[in-house]
Length: 611
Image 1 (cartoon, rainbow, N blue to C red):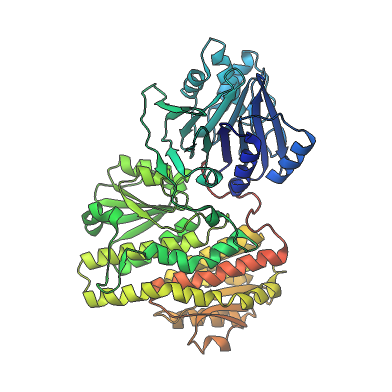
Image 2 (cartoon, rainbow, N blue to C red):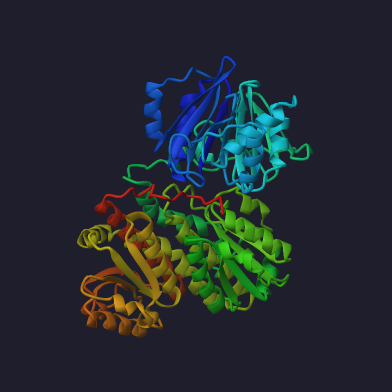
């Protein structure tokens, strides 16, 4: 979840590190810090708050120019956000610096032992244990690489780790287990980062570290081994996105930019895959397992947060169109209840980052039980992408806003493609396949039309900015849309919001309805339209303030709702891709109206790489 940047080479490192930290601030913004090496010493600067506050501190306390250094932006786990708990952390002598993403689960046991050996701790973090443990091992004459490797053999937990020592100031040592880390390979310079966004301005050549690997990195070389000293040959790969994709491009916020990118990102998810004239789909990453999908006894979709909501929509698609029993699981709960999974099951892992810790744990559990494990991820080269048996990239491009938007609609698009592929293989006619393919092909233009309602939605946000509670209701495949709309509002405007199946309102939530309660209905003209209208009537009778997401040709809803946001009609199970867009805009404009930080909401970070 936190951001890591390291540089070693010919240039002054600090400007490069700070630039990288700014690009990674969406991963953690509780505090930030840097360390550089010069003249046989390490120099530190740490500051609670955003990277801009670290920059201000560096103006007052200038660090010496250096060609090697590292920086960190933190999302707090152990220890509150303050200067002391910010990374990097040092040992007793100040000769070792450590930055770390993840959690050291046995830190208290290690800390107690180290304290008995005379080590004095300054912070409340689990990370500081690593710096003292490495210091203790180096007392026996071990070099930094060996000390890090041996220290990590004593550690339980997850880590993306960078370590420097003033005794070996020409290199740093990095290691990975469960938390993303990549090397950026340059000409006479090398970098390390937790996300490619930090290094794309300097190199497109990267090396992805795998779990259990340790690397020693200098300006001209790197070597990689396992914790057990088995040498690993790494392949250098090329980053496939541009710097322009992680800039705001004239938009006030990344979230707004990413909402408006959806016509193109949905198109990208289908490009080269959707065969409109044949009514079919070709997914290269699934061709070798297509028979497993078609003949699956059951599909289990696993995700967290927004990805879980996407999975719920996928359940409707796969069961109703492809006729395969489908279940959706929270990744955080899956492995802790000893799930019944067999070799006849297909497990579909949903994750924007491809690094979500709970989803990775579920992947390993499903693999161990013999299931066919597939990934639907956005980030190329991510851990889930590498460890799955196959899968599909959603091709949404870098998503910087913490509240996921374009990745969600791209996930839904990919789930629709997978569904159509299976359905055709199971006997759906070419005629029916063409109908669905044409509906999918039309979605980008329809999303573009929905985005034209932005001014109306902004006025709506101004109307309701003082509300402290919202209720979101939908039925069928639009129930997950209600959940997602409520989540977006909670995430960035800090308004309490709940999503419910519309028919469940009578079983409790209806008690909340009064003249001050905004109720958002997702009510497309589908097979259960009349049922949802009855639920709208129930809210109207209790004077709730009704906001409806409805189709352009619906003339009944305007008699019941106080506000109506229009969306084009599409095939029922594809409707969520359109219906969620106005809810994304509503949450965005509500946050703007209330003055909250849209791209960096409090207590949240983009990629949850710890349990």
